[in-house]
Amino acid sequence: MLKVAAVGLGKMGKVHMNNCFYIDDVKVVAAADQSKRILKRAESMGISHLYNDYHEMLADQTLDLDAAIVCLPNFLHLDAVKSAIEAGLDVFVEKPMAKTVDECKEIVKLVRNNGRRLMIGHSTRFIDAVEEMKERLDKGYLGNLETLTMEEVINGPFAHGSVPMPVPEWWFDREKVGGGVLLDLGYHLIDLFRFLTGSECKVLFSVFDHKLRLPVEDGAIALLQSDRSSTKGIVNVGWYQKSLFPQFNFRAIAHGSAAYLSTDELIPRNIYRYAVQEGMKNILRRVVGKRITPLSYTYYATAYYKELKQFFESVADDRDPPVTCEDGLKTMEAIEEAYKSSASTYG
Image (cartoon, rainbow, N blue to C red):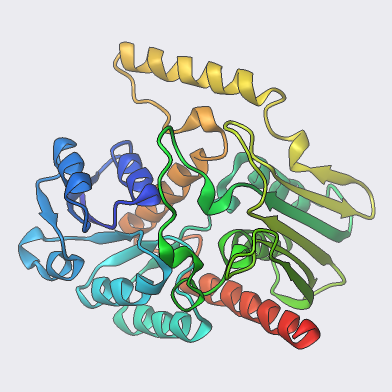
C-alpha cells in the first residue's frame, strides 16, 4: 500500500485526492491546506492527519509516506516539490512543473540527484481521443505528418461551479503565476505537439491578445516547428469564451500526406447523451457494489484519473513515469521561447 500526502486541496487537489480512492493499493493518509473548511471535508473522507503547513506534514516521519501530490499555485511548486523530494518521496505535481525554466532545471537536478520519480500532470496526453490519434500516427495512418492544429478556448480561471467564487489574485500576478493563457492552456498543447510528433519543438512565431484587459494574456497563438521533420504545429488558446459543461472547446487536427484526422471524430458523437449514460452506469455500479469509473461522465476529465493511476503504477514498479521532469522542462523552454518571441516582435 502506497501512503500518499495531498499538498493543496483546491480544485485540482480535490480531483486528484478523490481519484486516489479508486486506485488499488493507494491511500491518502495526510493532507495539508490553509483552509480549515477544506481540511474538515478531507477529515470526513477518512484522512486522519491534517496540516495547515505542508512543510510540517512532509517532515513528519511518523507518517511513513511514499509519495506526495502537489496542487498549489505555480509560485509554490518549486518549494513544495523540493520539500517532498528531500523528504524521500516520489512526486506528482500539477502543471506547470514550475513557473520558470530556471526553477524547472532546479527540480530536474533535485529529482535526479535524489533518485526520486516525478510526474507532471500533462493530462491532455491521456484523453482517449488523443491516445487513439497517437496510435494511428505511429502506425502511419496519415502518411507523413505535415501539420498539427491544436486549440482550446474556454472560461479559464473564470469557470466556476454552482456557487461563483472570486478568482485568486495570484492568477493575474505575472511574477507569481509565470504567464497567462499560454502557460495555463498552451502548455498542454505544446506538450501535445511533442507527444504526437515524438520530437522537440522550436517556436517560429507567437502573438498574444488582451481581450479582457488582464495583466496577463487571455488569448495566444503560436507556430511550432519539429526539430526532426518539417512538421509544423499551430497552437490557439483563449480564456475568453463562455463554455458550459459538458461542452469542451478542445481539438487536435492532424494533416498528413495520405489523410487527415481530428479528435472531434474520435470523441462520443453526442457528448450530452454520453454524460447521461456514463452517469447512469456509475449509479448502477454503486448499487451492485462495483467500483465506479471516476469522472467518466465528463469524458475529458477521466484523463486525470488515468494519469494519476499511471504515476502510482510507475512508483510501484520502480520505473520512470510516462511524463518525466525532463518533459516538464522542455515544455517550459518552449513556453519561455514563445514569450520572448512575442516580446521581440511586438515589444
